[in-house]
Length: 155
Image (cartoon, rainbow, N blue to C red; front, side, top):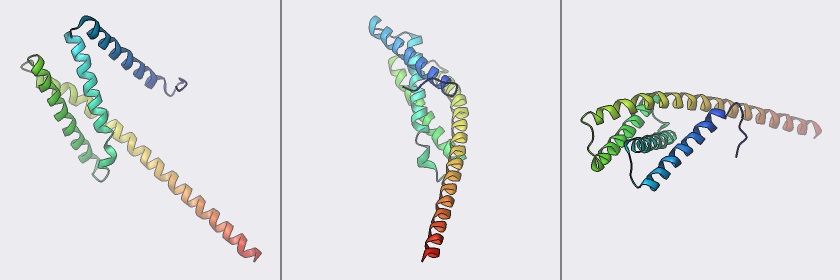
């Protein structure tokens, strides 16, 4: 396990909160053998987060597209999955008449903001890595040139 420091504190906190929250919900469901509305919502949010992260993790497959097209394609896939989850939950219990609209709004806003931030940081990281690669190539080329030059001088 990593040491907790200033840089990773929030990330570690979020991971711990998620694990404790989900485990507590699952233990309650197992102990009481029923799912109340709050527990169901926690599991639905967990499913939505899982779907979102899974879809965003596939960004590398869309690098040939413009960032806007990639975001829209991933958003369409994510919202389709969330609609399917809402529909499946309707098989267990009737969905509120405004349930699909509510799910659309409460999922769309955080997803779009989160995906834009993720893709911005991803693009920044790619630019940084490309700069590092160029620097390594330049240094390697300089080293090769200096090595060949000193060899020629000795001959």
